[in-house]
Structure formats: structure tokens, C-alpha cells
Image: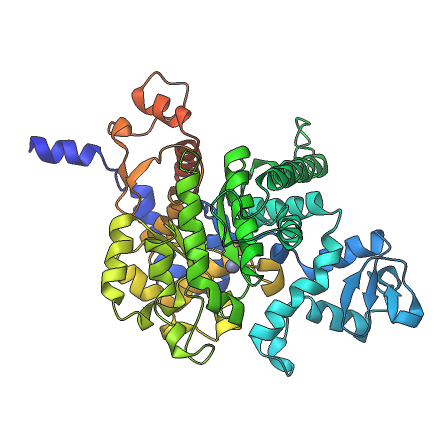
Amino acid sequence: MYLLACLSALFVPVMGDEKEAGLHFESIKDRPLKLRHFLATMPKGGDLHSHLSGAIYAESYLAWAAEDDKCINLSNLALTPGPCDASEDLKPVKDFYPGGPQDVDDLLVRVVDALSVRDYNLRGLSGHQQFFSTFSRFYQASAGRLGDMLAEVTGRAAQQNIGYLELMHSPGMIAASVEAERESDITKPYGERVSHSALRLIAEKAMLEIDEMEKGRSLLQSCQIRNEAKTGCRVTVRYLAQVIRTWKPEQVYAQTLLAFMLMEMDERVVGLNFVAPEDHPVSLRDYSTHMKFIQELSAEFKDSNQNIALHAGELTLGLVPPEYLGWHIRDAIEIAGAKRIGHGIDISYDPQMFATLAKMRQSDVAVEINLTSNEVILGVSGENHPISIYLEEDVPITISTDDEGVSRIDLTNEYLRAVRTYDLDYKTVKGISRNALQYSFLDGAALFQNPKNGVLATACSAGLPEDLSEASPCAAFISNNEKATKQWELEKSFDAFEDPF
Ligand SMILES: [Zn+2]
């Protein structure tokens, strides 16, 4: 009895409200519109897999391009800086966006389609081709607009009750690649392959770029003005330095080194990720080399954080030759030390699948699931998606958007899709929401020993405090750990959300 009493004190008890919320959830599961509303208002811990530039909707890029006197290139529908020389097929964006009441013409429709995957299946392109072709088209519209971009994504997150975003962003990555082109030799010993002092300068500039971006967001959302602050201000943001994996090995090396420097120098950069198509011939050829870069740099930077998240296994049969399937996830974990896997689609091609899954479960390696993205880019959906395997094998998962602007979705839509397709119950969905903070790279210890079962950290065995100013070991523990603080806030939000049921 005593042991049972002690054990039960470690759990967040299943309150009547949670049970009632779960019953209501079951009653609306077949009503997509009611379910959408429920999931939009339900607190969602965070989005751990969101590329900042891909999170912006085409209309925002067009509005900024119009204000900034930028142009559309009529031959490839890419946004370009001004001046707009008609002889070079360049047309001012402000001539057609937003346009007058009679002006919603063919060009505007074609441009929004070109900057996203809207109606891609009506065109003669695969989702994969269309998806990856959008980034170079809107890239120029992002120049000078990073603050606006941050305001857009945090505003959208706040509307959906999302408390945290871990955004993938590439500050300084082009400069690092240019530096590698200027001088580098990756056959030399560590420290001599590329100029560390040049990369440190690039890292310092990248930090200033983040300062500017955050200042811009704060101004746009009036975050410093009491009573005027927009709800987006409440959303906590951290960054993952994203390394572009399709470039030359020396450039990828320089970017990876820059990512480690940024993690060491700037506490807002909490981790790194490798991005761009994993099925690109260069990504495939260099995959093992890239994993070794990360392994070696982790050892060199062992005193700073070691938060590695990697797109791994974003592959399927037919997209690449079979030899490339079934080992990227394992290598990401075993060689590069990845704590989170992005996508994880090709797990069933791993000849040691159950051993890999067991390792993920035991080492607490989470998988970031991106359902819409996987359907559009890889054509993988429904029962062919491995989300059910991860759930069955008790591997922690999070639900994320990947590129909500390009895909024209939001995080609520991805939760809705998961519930409708895989018949998830409320407890599972709540656990997934909690996972987004538990497996985040926020600083400090986590509130849960096991978020799935609601087992709290030892300091909180007597239960969660109502107020963090309370004199209790749990309140002190939460206050001293940023991650636990965000998690405590999420639990409070769930209490308020479930109360009316
Ligand atoms: Zn991604």
C-alpha cells in the first residue's frame, strides 16, 4: 500500500476534467469542423519542426515585395529585387498585388501557386518538384523582412494556443559557404580545415541578425508596451541552425562548424539540423561524411550543448535506389548523436527496424511527424505512413508542420489529420502536445520523467504548484528550469482548457 501511495504521488492524477474532455473528444471525432475547433483551442506545447522561410504564406511575401518595390520575373515566377526592367521580363509586384477589385487576374493566381504547393496536382509537376522549387522563388522577398516573418509565425502560433516554436533558420550559412569556397581543405587536421576566426566573425554577424529579427518582431507586436502587446508576444522562440546538406563537403563542413559556434555563443540557438532534399544525389553521396562531421564537432564542442535534430529517412522506395533506404535514421542516432529525427519515413526499410525502434524508445529519441509534407513530397500517407509503428513501439512523437506557408496548412490541421487518419484518443493527443516541450531543446530539466504516463520529476512528487511563488521544492525546481517552466504553463493551460467539460 505504502509503495502504491508513493508511486501514485509521482503521477499527475487523471482529473475528472481530463476524462470528460476525452469523452467529448470521442463524441466529435467524426465531426471534422467541431474537431478542428476543439484542436485549435486545445493547448499545443510547440512546433519543433518548422522552417522559418517555408512557414510564410505567399501572400505575405507578395505584400512585402510590393511595399519594397520588388519585382516578379515573368519567365520563372521568382521574386527579385528592383528595379523592374520590363525588357528583362520583370514586372513590379505592386502592379498586381493586392490589385483592384477587377484585378484578381491569372497572374496573381499563377504566382501564389508558384510560391506554394496550392493545387500542385492540377499541374504537370510532382509535389516534390513543386515543393522544393518554391524556396528560390520567394527567397529575395525575405530580405529585410525577418522581423515580419517572425511576427507572422508567432502570431499564427498564438492564435492556435501554441506556446513554443523551435524555428529552423540559416543565419550566416551562405557566408560560411563562401568562406569555405575562398579557402578550405577538409583533408587537413581539425582546426586547419577552414578559418575558425573567419567563422567566428560570421557567427557574431549572425547573432546581430537574430537581434534585429527579434527587435523587428517585438516592434510589430508591441511586445514592450503593456496593454498593447499582441498575443504573439507570448510565444517563446528558439532557433536551430540549419545546415544546407546539398552543397560541397567543405561548405557543409564550414556550415556545421558555424552551427556549433552559434550553439556555443548564442543561447537562443539551441540546436542544429541538416536540411534540403535528403534524396538529392549530393545528400545521398555525402550522408555518412556529414554524420561524421557532426560526431567530430560534437567531441570538439563537448562543453556546449549537444542538441542535434536531423532530417533522416525522409525517403521512400522509388524516390531513391533501394541501397539508400533503411539506414539514415540509425546513422543519425548512432554516429551523429541525434536526439530527434525529422520525418523518419523509411524506418520499415531498416533490416534492424525493431532494434532501431527499441534504441529510440530507450534513448528517448523523438520523431517529428509531418503528415501533409510527407504526402505532398513523398506521396506517403495513410497506412503507408510509419506514425502507427512509432506509436505502437512507444517511440515518442511530436506533430509538426515542416513548412506551413508552402503547404498552406497550420499545426492544428496536422493534429486534425493525425486524429482523423489514425483514430488517436484524447490522452494520446495530449501526450503529443506535451512531447513538444519535453523533447524541445529548451534549457534545463524537464517537468516529466515520462510525459506519456504523466510521471513527474522527483521534485514535484507532491503535485504541481498553483503558483510558482509558492515555497515548495517543486516551485523552486520549475522556476530554475526554463523547460520545466514552459511545461508547467502548458499544464495550467490544459487545466483551464479542460475545466468547462
Ligand atoms: Zn523539414
